[in-house]
Image (cartoon, rainbow, N blue to C red; front, side):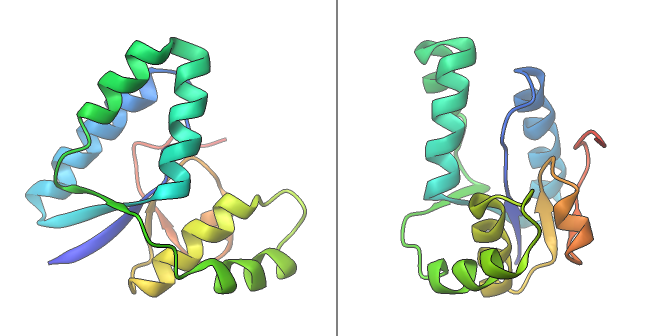
Length: 130
């Protein structure tokens, strides 16, 4: 079974449902969707502020397989090295996502940031193009 790294930072609540649709497609392809715990925390904070705690909790309740939350972060040293080398516009969270993708030997990242493509990863749809 392959793995795909998910990075769902919100550009509106509709992005969640687009993510669910993409998750169903990945599930039918027998791919797990990996979510670093740090990304889950950022996701909950943003969604909680924009849509309320109830909506954030409802979204997390949907994170059943194929979503797998990675609780241990062994990729931090590699993420720090990436952070040192990337342009200023690239966040540490983006670097962490790329480091986790490297650790799990996948180029597929479900996310909104063009930086992933610029760094050689495949940004999966339905992420809107900036």
